[in-house]
Figure 1 (cartoon, helix red, strand yellow):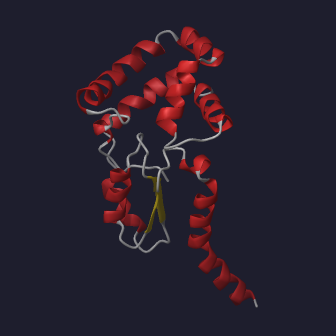
Figure 2 (tube, one colour):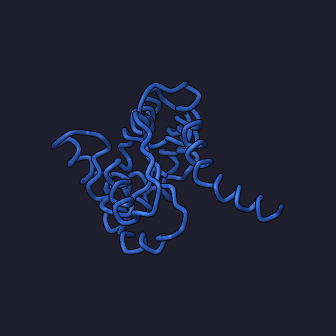
Amino acid sequence: MSASAGDMHELTFGLPGFSGRLVNRLTPSAMAVLARAPGFVESGRRAGSALGFAITRRVAFGGPVPASYVEFTDEMLAGTPIEVVADFFPIFDSYDAYAAVPALQGVPTLILCGTEDVVTPVRHTRAIADLLPSATLREIEGAGHMVLLERHHEVSQALADLVDPYLSQAQAAEA
């Protein structure tokens, strides 16, 4: 769900052209700088801001959502220490799990994403689906990276569609 098997070095967080490439190139360095001043960063994150809210809204969601969804996501992000983010972020440049995907062949698998996800764009989900033709691919139109929250009813239905046949088989075997 909202996942990628690689090519994360191409991310632009939805920004077009030069702006997107610049953000992609500068973000790891910016994270490293921010990690050197964790107290400052953490106090700023916890204090909250209209800018932080707007960025979370833009990056996490594909369309209008209740403010409580954005606040929840913003609080969750603020709860992750900046040192953790700074240590994790550089891994995106070399992350490559494409070779591991075929191991799921034959295992009931749901691959799900929002079509407006700017963190793990839909092309990443489609690349996983191409490597795993036995999987069910669900693209939730208009949803963003937080599709699980943003469109929880559709996600729940997709998960139910995946497991219901197996639950029915298990119940029939018990009878």
